[in-house]
Image 1 (cartoon, rainbow, N blue to C red):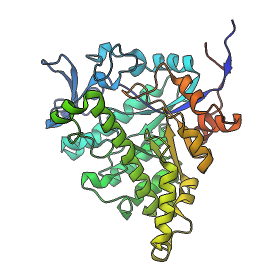
Image 2: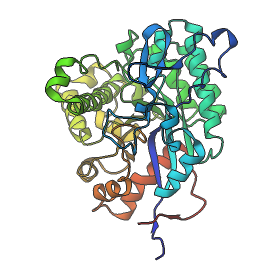
Image 3: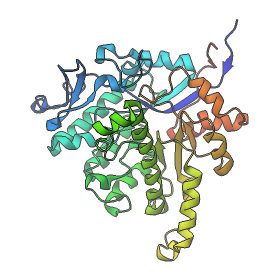
Image 4: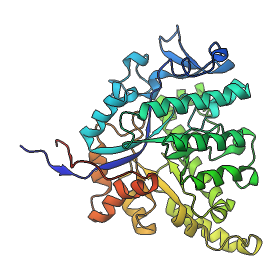
Length: 397
């Protein structure tokens, strides 16, 4: 039986499980004794990333649970037990081909989803060096197929000058997006609207690089969720659900902050992406923004706003979905298909795995072919400069 022909997909949110030696070979020699490292927790047997004096940050295996035999929080005990596609670019390409995924955007784990973990190192020079080391690793990782891997530059966002320098450096290395915290104020820094950040927006716009707000880039400690009381009464799976959905909604707040910030007025060519947060709430957010915008007579107070918040969203902001089956049709009906992107979050705990094509078909079962192609390929290709695939796509059903 011949394999059916299917359309290629661009997956705009996946992660790399970083190898234990990532920093050892890429930092100046004077920092190797204090570099982020992997240590084995004798009590659990898990390999853990340790960054600065904060103690263990996260189990290595929790970044690569796709296909694991038992439900989360069960996970590979260490790096050697992780699936090769989580850390090896050649294995990742094979995995992509098996699902007709032409390109994948790549995000970090160790430094956090916005580089905020490096703040715990407290040495400004070391903090920046770690971000640069990660970006160098990412560039090397993408080398086997730079046309298919979408490198997203991590930033030392706490240092504007260093961030601008890193955007310029990584743009020359072929990176195609920029990772920034959607809530810098949660780290004691100025709010998004503050002109403090203007050099970053100017640099990203000049280099045609969209800005990603990935969930969990603010206060990601989870201390308010992972308490003994909650785990007793909610179960581990229940707490994980509350925690994950709270992060989705945090990104909704960041979208609202962005729409009211004036950044989109000042930088009309700059694009923003809300990553891993879902799309079902977007119509409500836009309607609420427009209502409060008019009710509060914001235009009279902020004359830079030539349009309503929803119109700035349509021009410059994207949302990403993965597990939603009802959301895509509802959001397409309300705001159209041009601002929507598809992701899998591979290989994280809530990712699509073993059901990627089924979820795609369930969410787009009633979509016209041109709309389906926009969500699955064209929107992302235009945003990240992904070229046309070099061969037809096919997968075994």
